[in-house]
Image (cartoon, rainbow, N blue to C red):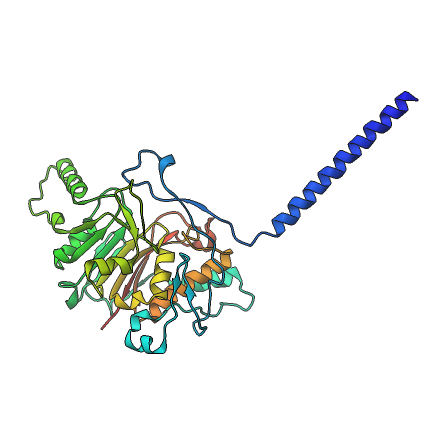
Length: 356
């Protein structure tokens, strides 16, 4: 009798454990279904020269945005990717200042069912390799980048943004022979004029050469990282700034050439320039785009990400900048973390030129 009683107690205990386990599984499944269809990414910013270890680098959490694809004809403030709010622009203001208009256009989808493959093929067709010699007859080339030469480039204002840590200003040096080097502004949080000079001296020693005519010391260097919002900490030597803030600091209104290579930050930056109308004040844009993942500050499903990419490039073209050069990188063929998808490169070098 005692043995039977013990068996019943053990059986009841096991039944309770099984029921409790099933309850926990059901609750977890329910909570997972209640989450939005995005994932919060904890992103590591570039390790700058004042950090000794990767673990000490600043981490930035980009909050997911909602209602990203607002129609241009809606009234009210416009929320940009960095969470800031663009004030509502009155009709009189838009007539007085075209640069304040939002130039970001939310285009119709490639297919009614918002198919990922259809959207991706349309986007890749938009940036397919091109070399427009008609609208960019005179040009200089450096690696994969193409720069169109024009009459206003010599005395024009040139901005170069990058996150390179090797203090490489080879493109800017090549460009200086065609433009006023005092009007070339280089923004990189990782190096200064001293670091560039050391790099040039080291390269000269390796090549057993000494370039006495090195003009890199005449460039304007700033330890600034281009971003969609500004920030600065007391314990670091660099800061983040928006293009609008930089132009105000330098007392510039329009730019003859802007070159950016921001390691996957370019998508949110280009969108902000479109939303705030900054793109209309740029005569030529050279940008390296990255397709191996969505990019910093870009959220959504894969089809939504590609749709945003398409909207960004199309809006730049419709703002008056013609795509005159598109060169795929020779790197791995990765598209949104998928290998060999659509047989396309992970990166493209694009040049947009406002032919006048």
